[in-house]
Image 1 (spheres, rainbow, N blue to C red):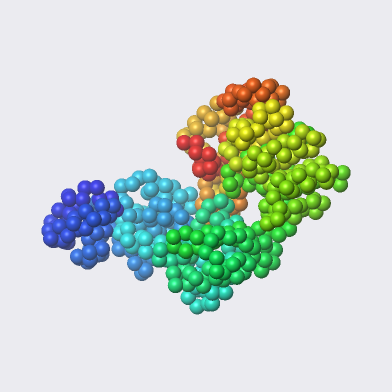
Image 2 (cartoon, rainbow, N blue to C red):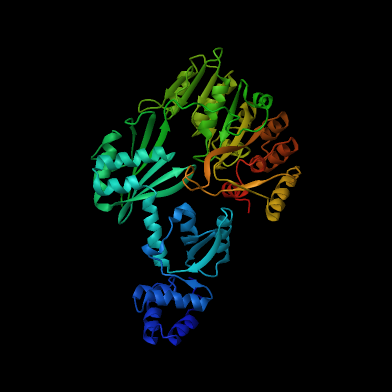
Length: 545
């Protein structure tokens, strides 16, 4: 609730006989110790008067309807109409549906950004919102309950099952929900379980603190970790058909946190164009089918670099080519490749030196991490091999700067680096529940401004976009799966000359733009215009405004 004019509301409540002046003094004293808490919520916490009468009176003072949210107030299942994340973000709760009208309680009456956003989401579902106001404490209580409902199996197993069943339920539910990672995190008073689905983290369960050591013990046992060690460890779970689960533990102040990476065994490699790579097959071959050179895939952690590498290698894989990969670990096994996994007795550098004596045509190096690895990769490229690898940096042009900072000479970079690719992953609009609409004027202006900056004009006639609504298929998120957005820099002779001369990345970028280089945002806009994703999701990844 908005209580910026706290004293006038307090006076109004006293005038209406709902509370006394002494109650207001107690509330103000409480507020000095908890300055972020609103006056009405404080009066509710202090239980100085009937809460139903209090919230109805506050609603009357603020010019809206007040409602006391209890279990009996919920005539509908809130997550059937708004996702849990939306309810948490905007601090609201749908509680009743009558025909085409839905009643929604907020903690803030005059925050138009929140209410208008929720109003539009519901309107896209054909529902007209009727706005109410309620206490923040009651909203939080309901949201906590909703959080538990997102994983009934886990909650049920937590209270009635064994630790073996509990951990098994967490992993199996994660697999069912399409999670890429499971986070099991000890907090001060509980253990939080979160799933990363399509790049976003969602809280799905909370486990009592007293079960912490048992949960940790079970995770260590099934991932072949040392039980007695209270230090960072890596392990692997092989108990689930079709899944190879990598496990990482890290002690923190509340205990040991575990992250489980769910990797599907024998997963089909997607065609590079299915991943969203723009351009034609001929353009792809010009960029990647090379010798005596290095191709670098650049992106932050979790942006799909390895998947793109696999797709490129799978595309180039023929019986006439000897392909060797050096990975940590081997995530997907591909028939016809010689795949080397880094272990306790092997390193990237040592394995790469050995591989060079194995007559390879193409070498996939999981990651260029340091100067020594980079130098050997350069040597491999200079001696007739084609090297594919990844590096952590923000875009395709910054790869050059990153290699310079590793200590590589401008000559070595220019003579060997052939192609750099940068990418991000954006969530796809769920095909089951997406709602078509016209682009807003603001979206048209923003998209046109960006496109014109890079020499493109957009005609919005007959183009539609989509809102993410939420349904059972997409776990009420509104998005299902992800697609890549890409930028490719082909190192031309002119750019090689700039690199040798030590030109800045700004100079290199300007030359690349002259040669028709298109940055990530352009491919992203094309994906929006095709209806693969929407402008809101693109902005979330690239921060355009």
